Length: 206
Image (cartoon, rainbow, N blue to C red):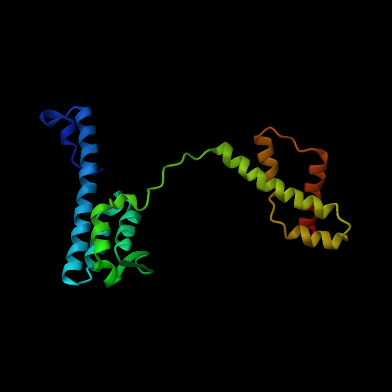
């Protein structure tokens, strides 16, 4: 399997201490963001000075940086500076297609570009740990609401035919509920069982 980068600095005479590698990674990340800021402002100022929309340069910069950056923030930075992005269905992405010339060339915009760091426009979403227990509880709340809906239908004064029709409109996976209750160590009471059996019997009869 081919390495994605050169790892020569991990072994041999070129090897660097772990602490040094970490410090370089942090420093280069900050330097990289500063270079993006510099290039972005350069595009904005060049376009304003010459009265030329550099949408192609904006698009090249945003896409050329790849997935390692917060593209939404950089796109928003350019949008705030008068550039326009539109959804390209063929490429399935936002593409810079033009500008608001007056806004892009205004002094306020040029000052904004210099004084606003591009990463501040849209904060990158923080990674969230998926919690199975929380997901289960959220599902059970939805299921409980469905169960209440079913209870009202079953205990209503409607005819069996009307009850069957209304129950068929309620999206409810009885078998899944039973399995989840077993996983949680919850045994449904007799009323719940009878309601579930009622639903199952109606479903089989349909």
